[in-house]
Length: 367
Image (tube, rainbow, N blue to C red; front, side, top):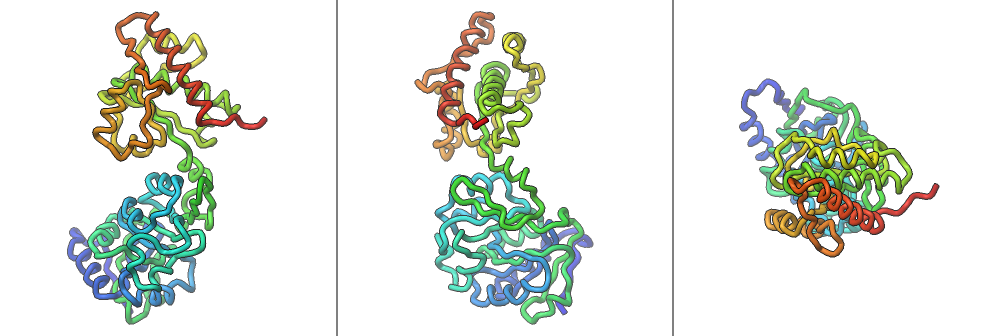
């Protein structure tokens, strides 16, 4: 019978992590905790890993995947993914979603694995990848020399089921969060297909797969809040829904400021001006343009070239997402302190640019 180690009883898990890493590097398979229950893993670079895991994948609900410690790692092992796959990876991981994508053959560094490992969790729709959130498991996966192949199972691990000479260790944890297996999702092109229902609902997946529009200015109290509120209003009109239904239609509209403090209200002039047009800005709370917010956005619209350049200087990898709001690449001047007439001009300019944006990115839904 394999040895069981109860992580909840340890004050320091460093030695347990080292033990797991040593066993994996020696070619063994190890049972690690997962938020849905358990996960038996072995290194992809080992010849016998896939055969051993296949023997353990029968007899109870389970699913197979390549297990990675961080969302970015997957890019080294699957190169032909869709924009949707990358979006879901950044928003779902770490978390209980197994993503399938890429070509129907091994790609990237996976071509260096043994043939049997290359075929693990592979279908014509691509290879399945999983990035778990358990802290101990992430430490182990980050310390080994290659991604792991894994079988993810539900509930508590049964030592009798794993009574095999190549599985010596079961690491247990009581921190299971979900009663279901991870949801298995195929992300091809712009279509999300749920291969196997699980911990993440279809509704939440549709929200996570939606488009995030982020409007950027300096303090997030004037221009970008007006753009956010007006765009949400125009967008709801265009697709014929209430504003609070936009998220379920696949649209999230946000704003932030490069020098914003958290929780400041919109300027009184902006609130008063938009109220006349039936747009409520009274509940707005400013927020800074954090790294996480920027990277989770699909379209980042800045008010000025200076805002755009500042974002790209800090995060050049966002180059395909960041644009000026103005289609003519002109700045939208800051009306702060310039009086209501300047606010009106600013609002009219923003509205004109947003109407152009709607024409480019949103098709009206059929009634």
